[in-house]
Image (spheres, rainbow, N blue to C red):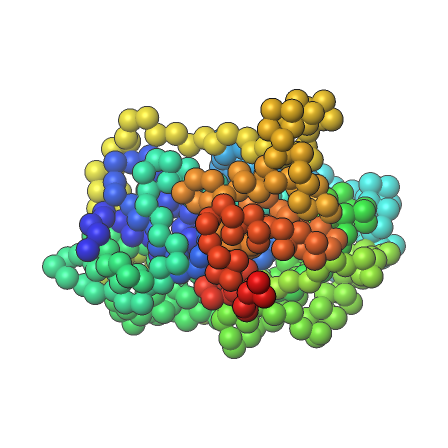
Length: 477
Ligand SMILES: Cc1cc2nc3c(=O)[nH]c(=O)nc-3n(C[C@H](O)[C@H](O)[C@H](O)COP(=O)(O)OP(=O)(O)OC[C@H]3O[C@@H](n4cnc5c(N)ncnc54)[C@H](O)[C@@H]3O)c2cc1C
């Protein structure tokens, strides 16, 4: 049995941000994640926007934590050397009725200290020529950012590990026993004893909670599907939103990504299967038709991929962040749907300030470090810088992914350290081979060979992503 003070269940953005924030204290913290890697749930597939906080209603945790989270990101992204774009967000109204709703948003923004600009339809079209002629007025929340969610979650986890947090990947929590005021968390082949458990299990949060009590909430998976447009489609510079509605939430967006692609989506459909992240004809058709409301000339024939994410929504319309009334030390951090990504640093702060601090005397440990060095990214360098690097380390001169110009050196970097990649998708998440136009058609076999060589594993044992997702069936040697 492993002894800990705190067990965090779930390695998405919520769990990793909590682990990062807890890592500066003198506590034994263990994070358990059922998948082979960090950020395989909702954190992997979303719109990647750090919303600034004008959308959630007053008096909600979403409102409170979104505004605070967006502000905390300003520091955290720089501390961890994460990539981001400050794109701004155009909320585009078509006609008088929708314009009235913009007043609700600006009123909230004024009260929350969120800056914005107001543009007429024509002024907005000067900046975004593909905006529909039907758009009559735009609010630009110009401090809105786009991030790379996988990177942020991975780096938060790395900071946590560097400061002493233990992370167990591939460990599914299957039971939690209460014993003498403590919890025994059964996770794969480990049993971890702790006095505090933080349930950050995303769409599975009600099942985790049911191990200790009958939860008052039920998770209700809501899927969102997207098109990814090729990098040479320069459609928009700002995120383009329609005016939000109660029925369909934030609506169908166009989002310029940090690596130069454009995301178009999502729809918002309740589904029965919590793990069904496949795309559907109807979902994508909805996206296609609804994008036309605010944008024209969207070249869907330049789509290089479609994907879907599942919102960890529940029977509650707000985030559920509370300590159980019947099980002391058991903290639910559930129903973290949008703006969960944007709120996550503030969720961590809230959990620690309101609940963890009641159970532990929080003393900062000596020498903790919340920073990470910059990754080597060949495509960000000048030719001169590349030449210097390649002369010293020739592995950076061997290009593996031709679409995204990713070198063997960058892939080797992605395998290093305690949270190094162990799967093909893990490599893709960390340094992006396979993200380009050919979607891994050329580089995936090479990445597999590098993994096999560096991890000293038979190629037959290399997984694409989740447990058992082997790529090869048998050797033909
Ligand atoms: C389509 C879509 C668009 C979105 N767009 C945005 C946006 O632009 N901006 C924004 O702020 N938010 C957005 N969100 C919301 C955001 O993605 C989520 O709020 C956030 O990712 C939730 O993170 P999480 O860590 O709580 O959940 P997850 O990322 O789902 O992590 C939960 C983790 O728990 C693990 N787990 C589950 N069961 C167990 C178990 N038994 N044992 C161990 N581990 C377990 C899972 O494997 C998973 O890794 C969007 C979401 C979707 C789906």
